[in-house]
Length: 127
Image 1 (cartoon, rainbow, N blue to C red):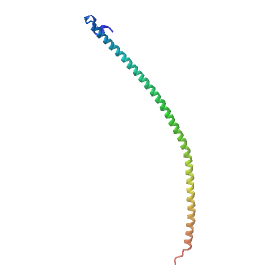
Image 2 (tube, rainbow, N blue to C red):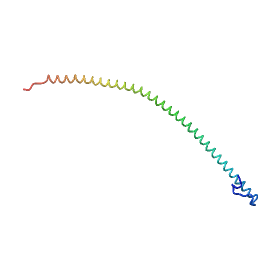
Image 3 (cartoon, rainbow, N blue to C red):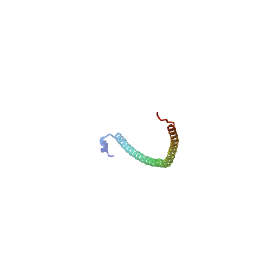
Image 4 (cartoon, rainbow, N blue to C red):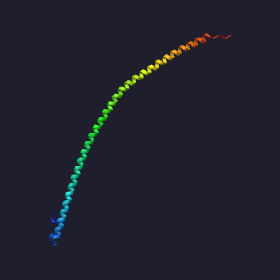
């Protein structure tokens, strides 16, 4: 660092005090430059850690998504089989109910026909 840049003149008769001030300023400027370097390095390291964390998080998310999708596909397959079985059970139950209704209808039909025949036989003409 030059004397003109710091604004200090060594020839002005200030002596060792001026040299001490110049050295102090120079040390402060060096410390400031070193601190700026360290800050820049720390920022770069933080960015690198963030990139790594994001990359790992994306991998974890992809693995989680794949597990959930596999579980979903498995449940879909199980439910599809259950749905087909359930449809067949419903069809069988419907047929049972229909057959029971037909049997009751036939039974009641016979009773109704008998009642009509009896009523017709007991019928007396009007005088």
